[in-house]
Length: 184
Length: 184
Image 1 (spheres, chains in turn red, cyan):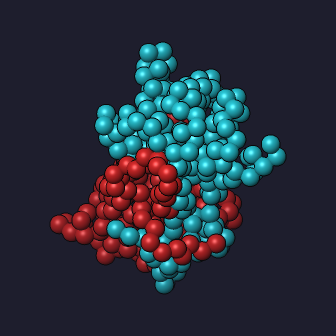
Image 2 (spheres, rainbow over the protein chains, first blue to last red):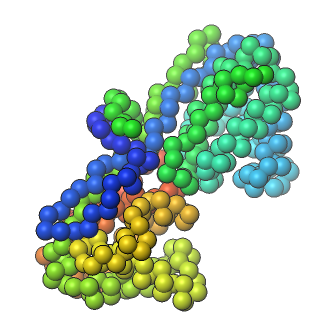
Image 3 (cartoon, each protein chain N blue to C red):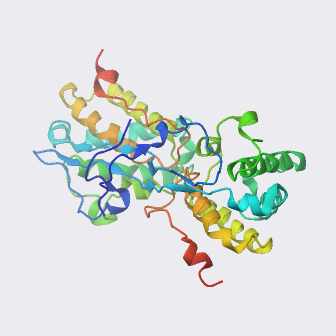
């Protein structure tokens, strides 16, 4: 199925017309969309080739430990063994997605990230925390500077796709590379 | 802002292509939408003119009492006074929306139904229960048969707009009038 209708406004544009109670004639509230999830540019293997598997795994571990201590920590297993297992699965994904060995899909199948995250309530704020903990991780671990932009331009729109709980009429906030890293 | 891009697939179409790990060349996952909220045909005042304010209010009370006893009962106030207050506010909305006195907007402003429901987690199943309790209400209270189709064709797509928690990759299920009332 391809979506190709014209002139469908996002929800955030609604509420501007006055409410119209029933009269002799019916009226229609037009079709709406919530928002458009933007394209996700997947990175080349350049970061992986320079940094290697161990650093990628370390990055995911670092990020998960930050998340566990954050306000969205209860989205992760409280049991240590289960937490390590979940972290390692994510590390496998990042290793494969960034160009390393195929250690994820042969075991788990297609990442289907939105689908896999549906059991967990992820709102706009949860996604922001996830992203900001990656900013901190990138700084803490000194990711090679020339690869940050490509990595960030992947995870920033990718993280939007995990949002499955809307709490605002506003479009999802964007955090462009230049706004986060421009001054550093 | 008007959404008029071509060829944006809904999420439900994704996951069909094999996962593509990083190589020397980057690749892009195209923009996506979740789903299109269909147009909402608002009813004429025909039901109101025949049934009157008292029956409309009674309908909302009946529906709310059914909801309170349902699996989504915890979305409503447990305190009786607060529950009655919430029910009456909804009844005011239905009276005005269906063509009666302006008893809602002068007090509460624009209905902005999606926005007002954002604090409450409403998933696809919750919306289905809300709708099916209206089916039961319509039967229990013997809404005049000639007005059911117009009423149902309003609340069925309207209820989709309250969904703010997605739990599936599938499009939101539709319950067309003919599928619900065709055999009765």
